Each structure stands twice: as C-alpha cells, then as structure tokens.
Image (cartoon, rainbow, N blue to C red):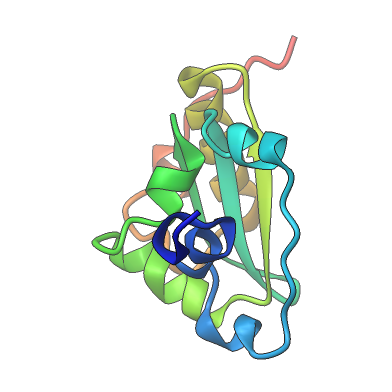
Length: 121
C-alpha cells in the first residue's frame, strides 16, 4: 500500500496536523467502509461545536480541501464525532437537528432559521 493511499494518509486529510506528532493510528478495513456511508460529522473544540456537516460519503466530504468551513474547524478541533445514517436524507435531517441544537460557529449558512422540522417517530 502506498503512502498516498494508506489509512493514515486518509486521516491526515481530515485531522489537524498537530494530532500526528505522537499518534499511532490502527484502522480495520470495516472502519474505512463505514466512512464511505452517509452520515453527519461534528468538529468539537472541547464542549463547543465548531462545524456540523453531512455527506452521502463521509470521507470524501470531510477530506475535501475546498470546503473552507470544515477545513477551519478541523484545524481548531480537539475531536471529531461521526454519526452513520441509513440514507443521505436522514443524514441531512440529523445535520439540521444538530445545527439547531448546538449552534456551531462555522455553520453560517444553515442557522436555526433554516432548520427542517424533524419527525422522529
């Protein structure tokens, strides 16, 4: 496996550089498969939500270098929380729910006034 396609290089596109000074990453094949599913990701700095996003393929969206808000949040975050969803639609609904609940500082275009009503039944 080349360095460019290794699990560690994939994580380096998502996590801030400071996490790799003394980090050993062990990823099982199923971990990467899960990141190819729809879901919601939350970048946290301690107890503060920095950015919340969703995608039909989590790894491709989180590692997109052109996604300015996610890139800024990733450079400041202390942890990343990932919620796997059954569909892209459920991921979008959960994203809106979390944005309304946590009011992240880098989600400028999706503030509370644009939230989607949730039906959790």
